[in-house]
Length: 79
Image 1 (cartoon, rainbow, N blue to C red):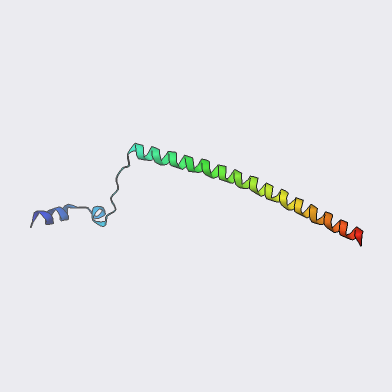
Image 2 (cartoon, rainbow, N blue to C red):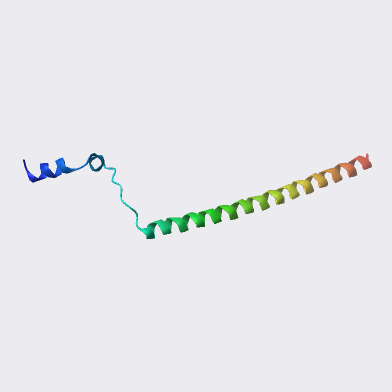
């Protein structure tokens, strides 16, 4: 048996299947947590911005409806 064959035989099933589990360094975990927190903050800011845009849209639609009603009233009075 060659040295290569002995090395293959000594590997565990998990190693052979390629699913190695390694512990991530604390720095990587901290970096991921910072990124997660940043993304959460950006999501919250985006949701607030969406709420603002929706309220502005509703205001604009109400104004447009008011202008259309006003024009209809003026046209009815002229007839």
